Length: 405
Ligand SMILES: Cc1ncc(COP(=O)(O)O)c(C=O)c1O
Image (cartoon, rainbow, N blue to C red):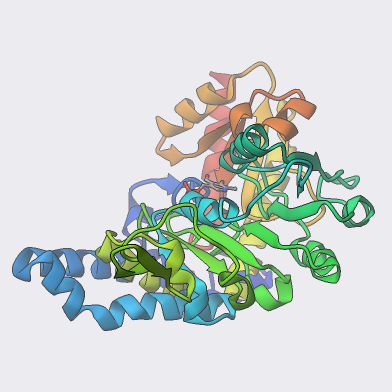
């Protein structure tokens, strides 16, 4: 192990930054602080993606899938290993949203059934609630925030009654560093026997996610962000005890067996939430990405990210016109901020022109939270373990130039 880029924290000491960067071709071209949009794929992931596409080109798509079946099954094993569950409890789907949808729309809501969610809920989940409300008369209730903007777990417990059908939370919101207390929420859900669906899209790959420790019943995530896998892939975990009770909103030849002209039966594992056609190369490569993250160690990744995101927040806090916008007492690698009298889009464009990738988070992505704070848009920097303190210094220097320009 070589020392990293100069700090003394555990996140730097234990990390072979040179290897992480050598295996990340994108590092050489730009400063990539958009891991909350899409992380840079490391070489092993790129190689497995390309190898399967090459195989498809050589021998045919169906034949390649058959030849690569061990690697395909390995992807389920990798995701299950990361989450501490069985491969039977994993569905691999196109993205986090499709996984989340397959879980959410499997519930039958009656008028008056309550969905408890959080103020940081992600757009695609919230509009699904709105649609469900419109169609069924279910009710959305927002759990109050604690003083730091995270879910207030006591407030959640006070809301529980016999009409609560589902607790559905975003673990890390798309618009900032907040980490919601997913495990404590899970303890409440478990104590009252209420199904609990966690959107772990931004947390997967940047911190450990153990479905037993979290007490979750369903969890969705994507491949392309902190897991550093390819685009167009994601997964859904559904607890074994719940699978048989959930009838997916739509079914196909993957999810079922058509047993007689007028009969079908659903698969008894989480494959019932999948559909038949899929990007096999991306599926295999997502498995590679998960194993790659596990090789680094998710505790070590989280510590390294905390070190770098802390340094970035300190640097931003020292610029008078910058306001940090992250909420939560526990924070992760997404660092959000605004600059006085500057549009976030102009800041992002100015830094892009200087070779630095950031992104913008609009109010339409997290309407409840942004509306309550009177914010239209934020600048988002999503830091990963392969970023360095030197990159943060260069970013702060470039931001100063953009602000002065
Ligand atoms: C919190 C959160 N949930 C869900 C999603 C959707 O993920 P996907 O695009 O893989 O469906 C995002 C994407 O940014 C997100 O930030």
